[in-house]
Image (cartoon, rainbow, N blue to C red; front, side, top):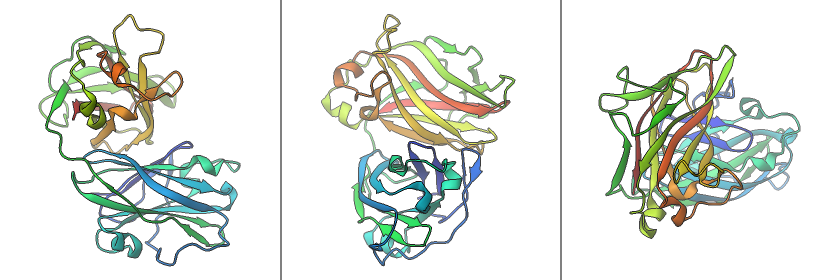
Length: 330
């Protein structure tokens, strides 16, 4: 399944996992504590101060799974979250074979002391294989070492798409960049010969920017109910920021006449590694929500066409951000 990367923020705990076991990673400028796998076969301690339950898979693509669960307790009682993914339920429970386990602490996530623990109820895993079953289990460890462990959840990644719409490969898309400094480059593409890149130059310690191509004018009227249910946006992203960036995929539907925000949709809270290596992100079309009121996207909205494709984030001053291979696959 690849390597394990845990990335988080206050409203969404993000992990990207694969076969190397517990590894250190950065989150909001702080590193994870390295920890070996612990036994999860003993079930939950009824006296545990932090409880987790109702683990489930919300959606999957060929390589990504979005998991969610319910958390009860207060942050002051939390010592660590542990999340295990494997290709069999037995491997999940025993932490053997295909199992991959990662641990988070409140410090590594940058939680304030009074953080509402109930907000930490989601995680993303990647580097999965298409058309394969995966199993997961979530555990909370309180400050007394007592464990609350969810039931094992199961999901299956989607089949390899048979169709795709290429938004960007090697040549400029229709339209223009905002900011203008988001330019075509052949420095280090993910695939092919060219990519887009932007260097953070704001004079501050960190620079927030929405990296976008506007006036794309791409027809999406072909999207039917089947495509709407299975389609996902794909983008390869890399950066060498001094800290990981919490990131948002921003898709503007319709035309330039739609300036009231009603056609602007997003998937927020995912995060990019900062090791200057590309990660391939996959976000289902139906996972997008309105930037106005967080209502889910509809088929009718998706069919209005693609006006803007954008990724935003906050990177350290001087960091180089690269984006490549923008596609809609179904």
